[in-house]
Image (cartoon, rainbow, N blue to C red):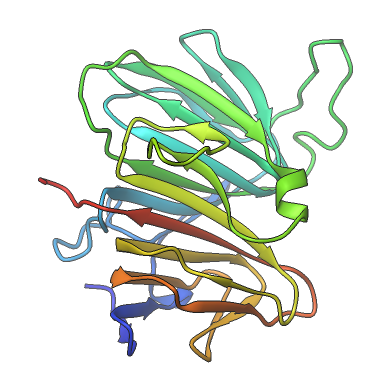
Length: 260
């Protein structure tokens, strides 16, 4: 099991350096949970969050067409851009500030590459495929199996600039999120915090918090890029920005776990 440091409010901090890692000449990937060749029976998921990979792809590299089933896949690019194409005819480029979801459902094939990209009006997207792309990819279990595959994306840059936690992916019918996922119990929030700016963690039975950039404090404890916090029955704790530059955090809030 990945070592964690128990906090006073029902959560544990998991440091960046304790993650499983996969490294090749074209990919670097840090896994918060068991993934691929890395398996730990005590660290397979949190709530309905199955996969949480922080990855870097070199220019001109990526994942060739491959299949997925029965998974909600949410991708959040930190820097650079990622080109998506799938067997349902969806294609596009994912960049910082744009949330993307692919519902694998009964079965879909897709590719993800750090490639050049030409927009629908024939203009080449500047910088695409020329620099490393850093992104976080997260897999969530759907409520039902056998659903039709689907795809969605939304640019939330303006909402993020306004401050506060923004619900970017959710199946909760009570929330109006930027993109929808096929799990009513799960919501992904994101915030960008300047130094001293604060937000309260939404309440939930299962909470997974991940710092993508910069540093912040949770109940006074410093957490930095790559650190994660896993909590049960938490909510209301304050996150406070503690970077000279803007810090960013992704927060999953879930009301059930696997098997419920």
